[in-house]
Image 1 (cartoon, rainbow, N blue to C red):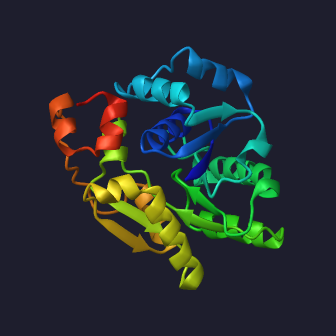
Image 2 (cartoon, helix red, strand yellow):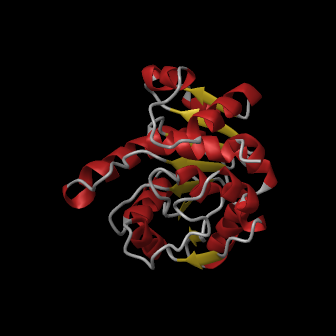
Length: 243
């Protein structure tokens, strides 16, 4: 599946690298060329497996960093990985504004049936607001939300082999179609046995804040390469070098 990821910061790079490892064709978009140039020299990260995953994505061509917004055209899924600091700003206003700016940049390049997926922690109602913005502009795309529940220092393992996958989608046939697309996006994770829950947008946003049920990860925090090898899908194992 062709996927775009908006945001060349920690969250965007992490998701882009993991998606490429799962076999997707990924365009990583950031308007700042300095952020993308830093990727090729190796990111500063506390995630021990991320540099190798990123390097393999770049070498394979499955991960393509760019400052050109037109490069996202033709992608079926568009992840918004901007405006996601470690702690919420007061009321989340700055975070929501950053997401809105990113969406405004994507909107002219979205096609009918495209799915915009939020990953940042946001105030309740953000997804519906973004969907309303697209509708007002006549953009025929859908907004969904998939909360991040990975642990610092173990994010690669948690994204490739999560304890659960949560799809926040709109109601009705539009939501059913969005869920089917998300199933394709998370095919590797679901094939490895991760349970999938489908919920509404507001619930998915609240889980992104960490207010949902505790995430009991299959891979323990002390897991080493051997533990990862026993529980991670084969396609991703080759990328992280855990075999």
